[in-house]
Amino acid sequence: MPNHKKLSIESKRSLWVAVLIGVGIMAAIDEIIFHQLLAWHHFYDQATPAISLLSDGLLHAGELMAIVAGFFLWADLRQRQVLDSLSAWAGFFLGAGGFQAFDGIIDHKVLRLHQIRYGVDLVPYDVAWNLAGACLILIGVILLFRARSMRHKIAQTHNAP
Image 1 (cartoon, rainbow, N blue to C red):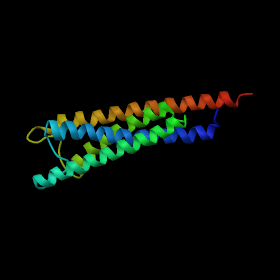
Image 2 (cartoon, rainbow, N blue to C red; image 1 turned 180 degrees about the vertical axis):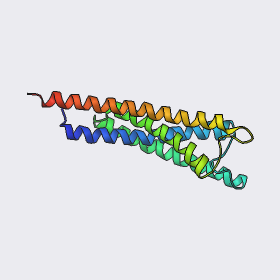
Image 3 (cartoon, helix red, strand yellow; image 1 turned 120 degrees about the vertical axis):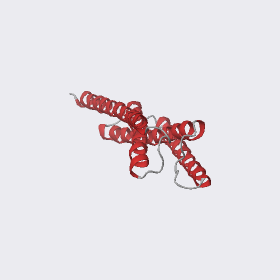
Image 4 (cartoon, one colour; image 1 turned 60 degrees about the horizontal axis):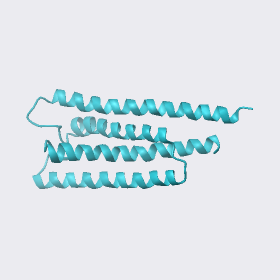
């Protein structure tokens, strides 16, 4: 069994690799559903249609790079048999929720790059968008505490006389 310090390092790696995947997956969901299928907005709506479309393409390229890089790193952890699944799930939900919250607060309200939708009362959309992000973050936090609790129990069992 690996020592506790090594386990902690690999748990952190599992967490951060999955954060990258979670960000990429949530960006893909946003881009596919709200940008392409519903056509409610583009990543950057304050310019010409060509620039708005270009901004969606750049978002798409970024999300794909995050997903591919994240899964390569995840596969490496799995191959070395050091993937901490619970920490990885925590990271996935933290990444997905973090993207959602960042997009809803920073992109929509602070920077005003785009809104969820135009020509409607934004309050219900903003509440639903940010509440969804908060719920995903809460799931991630709960899983993270469970993962840490399990590591602590493993360490106590391993160090017991």
